[in-house]
Amino acid sequence: MKNLMKEAQKMQAKMAKMQEELKTKQVEASSGGGMVKVTSNGQQEILEIIIEPSLLEENDIEMLQDLVLAAVNEALNRSREMAQEEMAKITGGLNIPGLM
Image: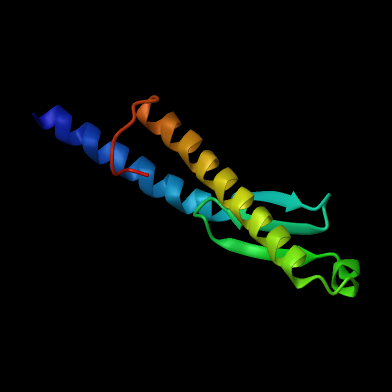
């Protein structure tokens, strides 16, 4: 029982460290052939959105909204995948509900 508690504490420390590291890791996604770019960190926070200025000249707000939405969703998906990969390194690929 004592060893189990020690292992749980080690895993908890590794997870806390991983969460801190995920704040600094970034992923980027784009849409519209790179006209909209979104950067997210490993904690699913959007850090930056870049919109190609020529998109604004088209005055097509619906298209711009769709491109931003697509890029944001892709960035968040990539961020979640990155976090899951990092978690798998700690848990040895074991899927533990509620950890991510």
